Every structure is written in C-alpha cells, then in structure tokens.
Length: 252
Image 1 (cartoon, rainbow, N blue to C red):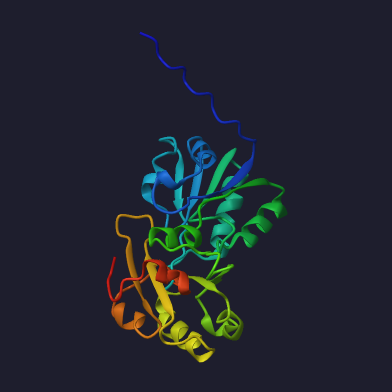
Image 2: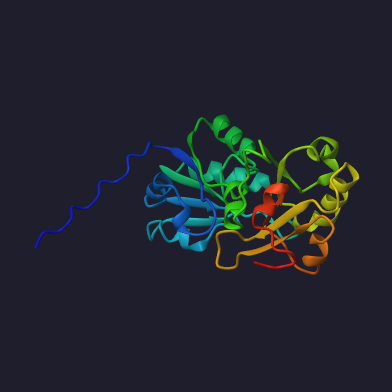
C-alpha cells in the first residue's frame, strides 16, 4: 500500500515576525500561506476576535499569547503588545502576530512594525480576508454595482465625531467597522447631511461564525430593529446595494 510523502516544511526566514491576517471565522477563511506559517509557529501573539480553532493549527509546543483589544472590555495596552514582540522576536525564529481580518485594515499595524524596525528584526505581512469585504457577501450585498454603486469607502465608526459626514454621505456605498455602539449617532449624521430616512442600511454581526446575524432596514428603522442588542463585532453597510436583497424588518 502506497503512502503519501510527508509535505516538506514551508520555507521560512530566521528571526522573522509574520503578521498574519486570520480572515473571518475559522480556518476555512485562511489563505494557504497563512495556514502553512501557522503550522510551524513557535509563538503566536493573537487578537481577541481570532477563532480559537485557528490556534489548533500550530504545533503542540507553540506558545500562544492572548493580546486582544475589544471596545468596552479589558484590553491589552499597545505598549504591552510591543514589549511582547520584543521579548519573543529576539528569542524565537518563527513568531506570528495573528490579527483578525486583514493585518492592514484597522489592525494598529504601524506601531508594531516600528517596534520591530527599532530592534532590527525582519517581518513579513500576510494578507487576510477583511470583514469589510466578506461580511456584506454573507448578507448577499454586493459592494459595487454598475448602475448604483461605482465605489465604496471603508471607515471606522469608533469615533463618529471625527469623520467628515458631509463627504461620507455622498459616497455610493459606505462600509463602517467598529460602529455598533455608535449606530444611532451614525444614522443621525447620515440623515443630517442628506441621506433620506428611507435610505437602505444593513448590520452584519459576527460574519463568518456560527452566530452570524443580519439586519436589513432603513435609516429610519435600523436602530429600533437592533435595540438592546450588543452588535459588536459588526459591519455596517449603507447604500442602495442593500436593496438588492432587502427584506423589510426581518433578521436573516
């Protein structure tokens, strides 16, 4: 009986920190390169929204360190994350900094790269599937349409007062991350700067997980539809593309 040969280890570089995008949900949404790197990791420093099943890809003796940040909950200070990177990057050859979605989308990447540059440690950036792109698809919402959406913009809803809503209200399709707790203010700002109460909006919570929830409505109805519900983590989509699959008042 023939047996398949054992796959050769993925070629990695010595003393390198791999910033890996975990995508959304479980291992199914990892890139092949991310999977191979995780399978040889000696240390994984991971964020709060990482699906724990992904961590099981790593070798049994891999050191796994939670360094999550969640709005309204106890978070690991950035200075502590930087310290962890220095501590492990100078002792181990394959250190993975595992971030949800894509490492370059609201992942606070800049201070961590600066930390590694300061100590002369090399790094690689491994893209992941961002929830900004994937969550709308889970809700059957295309971000672009040749007739109704020639483009889209991704913004953080963490601090709505800092955003230029006069400009944002003119964008065909607006994708808002980290805006769940500020949904009433976001709706207020959009209407103040020209979007009618009937304008379509969707909220997609925990896209890619077994707990995915989707609400579709209008600027006039969405706050009431999600009242007293914790929406974190969620992606908010504003635009007529939501109407492609609009179902009034229904939670998909």
